[in-house]
Length: 75
Image 1 (cartoon, rainbow, N blue to C red):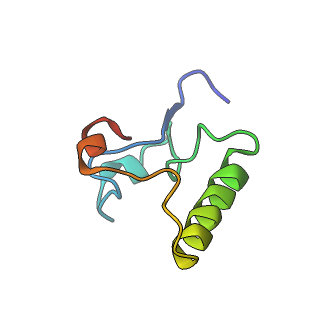
Image 2 (cartoon, rainbow, N blue to C red):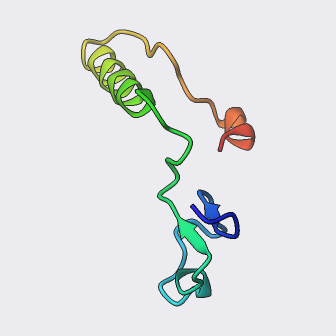
């Protein structure tokens, strides 16, 4: 990849509106907020989500709850 190319994994707002000039810039590559996942991360995230749903469906406590206070520090 050319050194002058900029990869943007996160934008504001996310998702960009259809008329955003970033779509037209020749030196910008937009990714769908998964650029940091280079290995099995996506597979592990999916497995974790399915595990949590199964626990919930079985009436078991959620293993990794997301609390409102956590939202401020989450990507």
